[in-house]
Length: 212
Image (tube, rainbow, N blue to C red; front, side, top):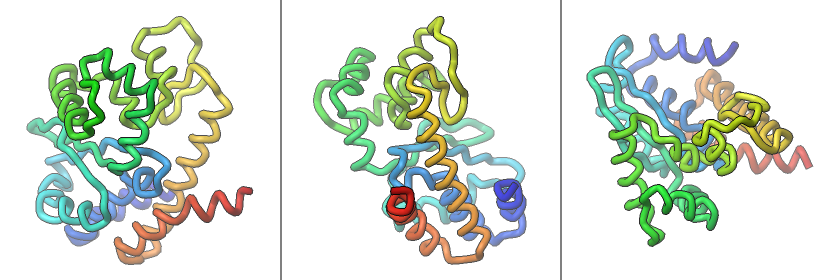
């Protein structure tokens, strides 16, 4: 698979290229606009992505207009949430999503910074709070069923565990796969990272035109 080829290629790249292409691939669904946010793990051992992140990664994300917040740091790794501010606001402040989060202790006011700080606080406390799925763009009903240890049968386990609306989930999974495939093809082509980010950002618009 090309994803395996990509991850192997990281070990022979210069530090800047390595972290920029690692971030582009792992944030590709956010860059393309099909997902409001994604978690990325930066390990401190082996290829030491953490050091590369500190040196080059932070400024790179800023240069392609992707926001991030550190969720948790341990001796082994740093976990960050990368997000598109506008997309994330639109998703979590959707009426039903917001009502759900308010029930968990998030504030009534539409303040993204406050919500992210609350998520970070709960991430530290609960390791990986279930409402993270809402921030990641997962359907609310599936998040609720997963949280409640539902008796419903899991219809498929892909980017999340699907308990409802199987066909819709399949369409979303297919779109995610197409974006990641496009991202890895662009990365392996040897193009510059900023050009790759630009191509990913415009891919879904062109893909949907072709699909229609």
